[in-house]
Image (cartoon, rainbow, N blue to C red; front, side, top):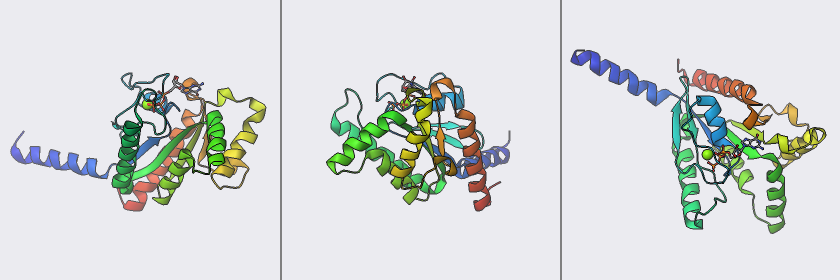
Length: 215
Ligand SMILES: Nc1nc2c(ncn2[C@@H]2O[C@H](COP(=O)(O)OP(=O)(O)OP(=O)(O)O)[C@@H](O)[C@H]2O)c(=O)[nH]1
Ligand SMILES: [Mg+2]
């Protein structure tokens, strides 16, 4: 390969890297972010765990049309000092702010059942629940959200609508939930909901590219 060819390849690679949109995966610890990333990438080296605080670093995976970004969780992490938890949260916020222009969508995952328990508890204390804070943060930056209501296996079928409508209200959206295209119920450990999320990601990535004139 001569010099110019090598240079051209590098340049193309750089441009590709520069313009490839990112899709970030965010949520509290232990909600199933890495389970999702593992399903998407098929990579066994994406660590999944029973305890919160398994993913401690931001990991990027090239999905062809976009970069999928697995994030550490925010909030409580087993065995980690509060200072470290705060540092990780700062890193996540910093990453999102720094790359906001390149982010086509944010897949925010919640553990649906504990979401309610936590939101109620926090509200009682008069603080803003961290999940809602994250949702506001993302949407304030004009990043398109995909809210994955995961671990629906822990909720009885006949209560699904009630619970999902409740989530809507917490997000300041009028129920019924299914009129909001960004909410996807899922049981990711069984792969349920995955196709729907994939579809939504691609819609957003393609729109993102179209609006920026990226081929
Ligand atoms: N019941 C249930 N458990 C699930 C589901 N999806 C994932 N899990 C389990 O939840 C646990 C945490 O999953 P992870 O994918 O490691 O969660 P994470 O959000 O990446 O966690 P951190 O890296 O610690 O932030 C694992 O034991 C998964 O098997 C689901 O749909 N239902
Ligand atoms: Mg993880």
